[in-house]
Length: 113
Length: 113
Image 1 (tube, each protein chain N blue to C red):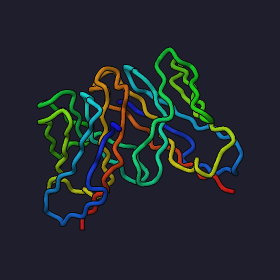
Image 2 (image 1 turned 135 degrees about the vertical axis):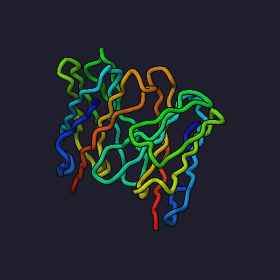
Image 3 (image 1 turned 90 degrees about the vertical axis):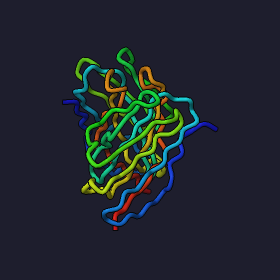
């Protein structure tokens, strides 16, 4: 079955460390996205990519970095520069035009300890 | 600035009752509007998606309406079940920014026996 796989489901990180969240899709979607979800807030866009080797900053990109070396993969690195990294992170993908076929992964909960 | 506002913030209803959730948006240029259901700690799951020309769309006991002139949408749930307890999120896609989505904060619905 096609879908998006995020790993790990839970992640703990010490302050000052970088950590990378994995996102893989086998839907043959061109566009991929990373969102952050905090309690009582809507999902906020961190980065998105419409094509391999290209990506754009979203509303809250500071302290994050991404890469898109393969169509199927869009990993997110939470750097030590991100001041409040504890959150629920969601990856998504879509057919490029019109954003149809938008599919979310099951999320990664990152906790900084 | 693109915004999506939802009301009420939370709602408690008895099993078997109907309810209606509201969504107002200022996203431009408009591409489509979606309603998602999100269980705690999980990724959002799509219920309906509507384009500019669609007024109503149903998915089982869920019926969404869209008034593109007033930029309002509603999600009606009939004969509620305990499994309907979740957060319901209104999401509006803009026809730019790689069709990244603009999320409301959601309505938290609790269905009680």
